[in-house]
Image (cartoon, rainbow, N blue to C red):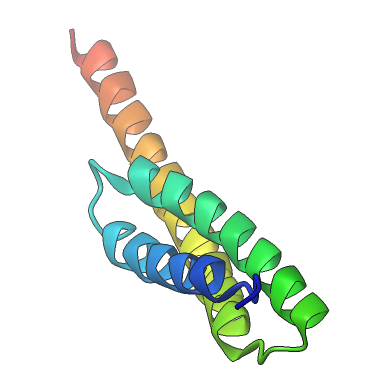
Length: 96
């Protein structure tokens, strides 16, 4: 049994799903951002290994897509949460 990239593809898929789920929680969406980046790397490496071994690349492609969606979603949620906190701090500073 050679290295067909199945393990990396599954890891990318799972991390992509985790990133999408965690992106919706404002206090931990930075973890989703990190999970999405690691999932993206795993999915790309898994796809390369599967292509080299002549194995199916469906899991790697799904992991790649989910990791990209998780990355974009967590980045948007992180930036909007940061902007909200900055606006709240700014308004509290004006009231004082």
